[in-house]
Length: 335
Image (cartoon, rainbow, N blue to C red; front, side, top):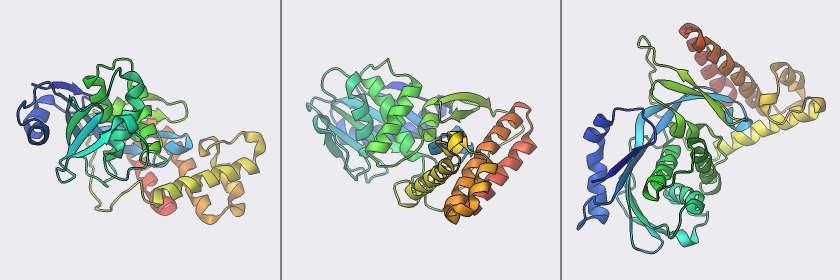
């Protein structure tokens, strides 16, 4: 039997077991366990996320408010005796077994399991002896849907390593940060901390207000039975590893640099430190596209603060109105 270790209690475990385990169990047995079945395995899961408000603010040290969803990545794994060879297989990657050596981990792989490799690299210091395992995974987080499938895979991998190698000294915050590092170094994506924080730290019935500068967070109740958050698929593909996301990161940095140069006494390091008045004063001196990017981030941080206050007063109408304005800003200023 498997040992179960859930990183986020955002779904009923009974439903999880009933509807989603059979595929992963079957994949593991077909790939690695024809003789031994599931004996000695661990089973872990980590969710995707939706961000209520605070888009493209995290890599500018701003504020975000995501919550976890019941789409998730599931991993069943077991130690093997292959002396540092890890074998991984994904139901979303043609059920093809891939291998990598933990003794020779390095960035550069363009394959899907680079996310797994990056997390393994971050945990090597906590594990005595050789890291060598077989892992089968499946995910209900749509790839390219903007629901953080990569963060879900990273956090699930981290949780799997903790369960498999009895790692007990890593907090949820440290787990998330290690997964961010994996994405930076192995996937070459200059992401902020939101996705991994949400997957590792969100709890049922709560969004998470994250201060991306201090890396602290606060739970925000979103369990009012009279409201529902509807997540819809626009069918517009989303890929952080493409050129558009890194371009937006660079444009936001250019906006922050321009403001820092214009106002040397204000100690502007990131757009989080600037005000609407600051960027309007600087508008004519900035590239028009860079201005629009900066305008969105600065006003979005203000909207997150207002949304947080509205949530404390249970002012759902105001919260919804702020979300609408945020979406319009994304459309008009972030395209």
